[in-house]
Image (tube, rainbow, N blue to C red; front, side, top):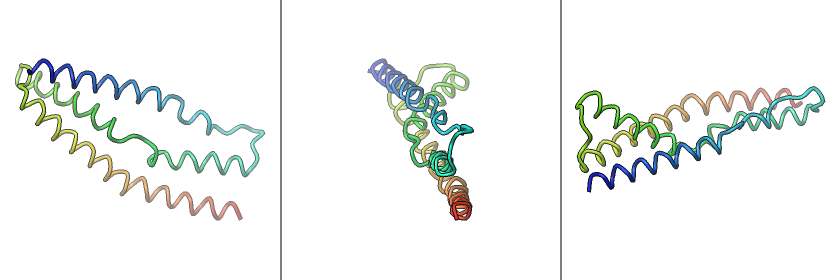
Length: 126
């Protein structure tokens, strides 16, 4: 039974990593300024960059960190593979911790920076 859960979490990890790479690949490349861009185009590109925290997939990153950190903890601290209940419990706890840390960071730091930047953009647009 334990091997099935290990395989399941490895598959979830690989899926999350693959999607993270393909979805985030060159995410800012479309927003790079070009000398021929108009002010309106630059405003649009900057606005898109500022909304990165809203569009990034937090559950995938949290799952990646949770699975990796769970295996690191068990291999480095306990020197063994986790039992089924331990694996599920540790990944669940680590996932919740990482997810809420990510949400908290986004809400406290990212949102304020985004709001200030949008206010500056409104002033510059005038």
